[in-house]
Image 1 (tube, rainbow over the protein chains, first blue to last red):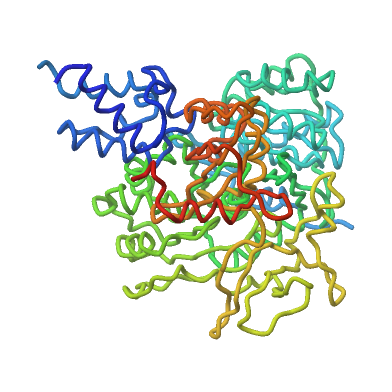
Image 2 (image 1 turned 30 degrees about the vertical axis):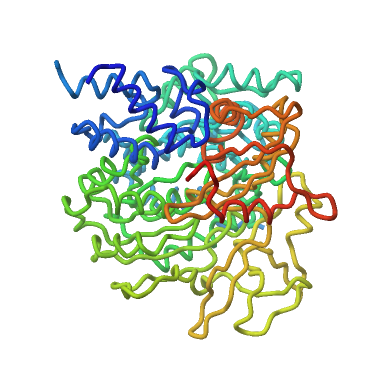
Length: 86
Length: 527
């Protein structure tokens, strides 16, 4: 799985779960998710659960902080770091 | 006439337990009772030297910390009332609060100083500020006072004597007109509540109390003043940690907390995602929650995971603090699907359930719960009309109308039915839906806005319906970003729906019922 595929899967999930009905173009790589309330504490936990099952990775509690999950780029980077070299 | 003040409750405990730990920060840094007493006296002296007088309001915009508690105590010792604001809320809202109640001085951190100045620009000048470099076990506050003393000694002043109705603090809650309103509470109000807590929960010096709620929230009154009047320790839960169920669950066990108090939402999250079974909670003897209905499914799960401690459901608005309480049984029957009752009135509160005309209802009939007694607020800051409107005069007493509909249960106590108006509670926060709408109307494209609270199995969802001047569909990302700059995050709507125009009632008002019904039927977008 390459970076573009990973990002696209995460983006689709965020759009479907947390921004239903939103135009995909509105959610960019740098749209702030936590500081705007798009991801709140519950939805962050749900997103982490999705990332863990979808990519078969484990995210530690300290890594699930909003700083690591504030943008699509941040989330993709976190997942990539977990998947390791392909 | 002089009476016992909130700060003298602490000073008495400080004399009895000078070397015990008063406050422990999340990171383990501590401050003793003697140190906290000394520090709060220095705040008092510095404020008095700056001309702060009895009845003045002093704003506090600080991260939750020992420094903030020392500031509260020092402000009250100077005879003034503290006005705490949410450090994470938009600067615009916080300065609006400070302007509204005319603070004479603001204690804040360097990082917020520019925002305060900007917020006071329309007023022409800002009140003087005392600036801390940060917060943590009182050290930054101490350094700041050292520095001010270096310029000029403050001198020593006695702590203020108070009467029961002397102003102690002003807590701002969401206001329906779009402006937060200040609930004015006195030393007598707080003291009567703290005395009830002491009699009911029986705190002792070895207790370790959580401080999970933010200090601008009324749960903080129990958090701060119950332990600090009994030689116990207040353990600060860092704001970030307080939102992470996994890390928080481990931390509560590691810190050996004996008493927990929060809104139900974080407890429900810990029951689901916290991994509670992995830790030892042997020290925990009291679990208190308040602020909203605890979904029974998650409460059962938590009760099973924490069978040891006593659990209490506490109920009460900021205007009265806790006024009814219900002890949760050790085992919740598995067939129970209804939420727990809000319970019986606290010893210092008198209840009355009335109909729309203000007449008492027949037992078992739903009506509005009214409360009289020493913990009932003085009024809303500078809002005489709203203050008059929330009180019912009856039998020579002043009853606060909670706006909450309840029924009295055959076995005694009350069950919460719902709200009379458009105020809701989400994650323990009071939210006037009108305040969110007022923020939405400030968007240049918005023509009409209506916000509906939609109860779902996984919690309450705020759904905003909008129509625009040019009939374009507003981006949800844009609207969330817009709202987050003007409202605390818990007030930012979860969902947005654009409509050509909002449905209206025959009298030309927004038809909230029709919008509510739209949410009950599956929306095409969710299919």
